[in-house]
Length: 185
Image 1 (cartoon, rainbow, N blue to C red):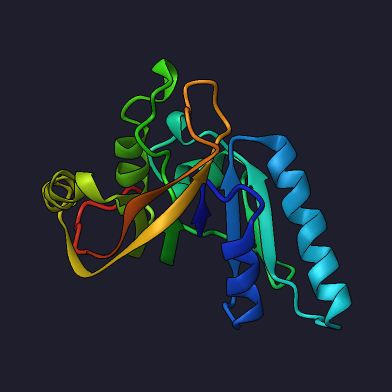
Image 2 (spheres, helix red, strand yellow):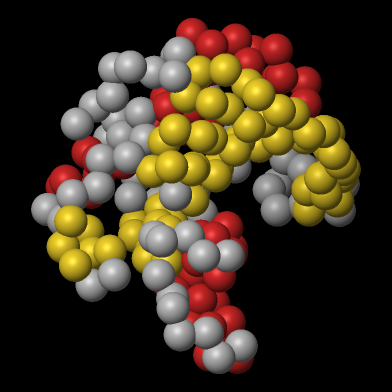
């Protein structure tokens, strides 16, 4: 599951690497449309015929878990068979950083809540300076960080409040193992 997938590169890569099913979810319908085009282009260019990534528009603020989101759509197809899908083995997410915009404040918390309700293993990108908070938040949700990777990530100027053309920020990628027993069905 690629949560907040944008143009879907993680879902597409998972599909190429042999995932039995991958799903990208994003609130932006234009990003989802581009993800579908990108997948078709990559698979056509490299003569790959097992495209199994799917993309849907969804607002995680309206749902507690992937099963809630998919149940609203009644079913999901895996390998052309209708099935019920309550949980993913792996979730990759890149929640909004910092969220200077009023409507996006604390968006990372909703992503973390949704992730713990939706997957067994989570790979989550966060600002390095939020590491302690994020680790404690996951722990409070019943999950534990098993691995950490810190690196510099270039953020281009895309908002009016950005003062530099580009700025490198320290980011931490966490691998989170979910031990939560209270799984929403």
